[in-house]
Image 1 (cartoon, rainbow, N blue to C red):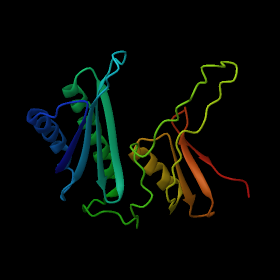
Image 2: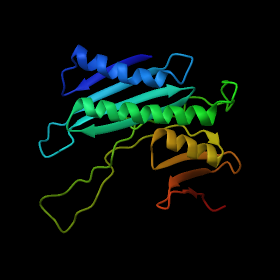
Image 3: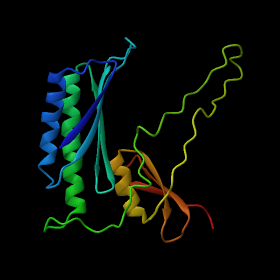
Length: 195
């Protein structure tokens, strides 16, 4: 496994890099080919954030993105948790997308519509301090990305692999933009435009 580590507000010591690489190597055992992994270790400077040490890991597998992040008070604990999460997701991915003979199922996918959490930013709400009566949120970031045609159940798989709450796609049956999302009852929802 090739691991690229980046640090934000933290000194990346050789011991920390080695520990991260060793923990992520466990996930490699599920695949015959080499996996490329990107990791971001960051420490929040805000003292009011209790779980300030965060580990984020992203792995691309056959055009799909596997991603996990965990934050605790200790970077080594965050690495342990995120490595376990990534290993579970890769195991789930392999059981869903590989046949019993070990060959990848053919989905004919490309990487063009993959979006990671690094591409998405939360909407920040600006507050006008002069007038508290007129508090209105505003759009602070806009993002464009290509949508690819797929079935709704395939979009649910992509959403789960990315760890998102929703996923937009072009429904290959209707050729309309649809959105799948996680419902509170644990099932999925599908939003379709009216014809």
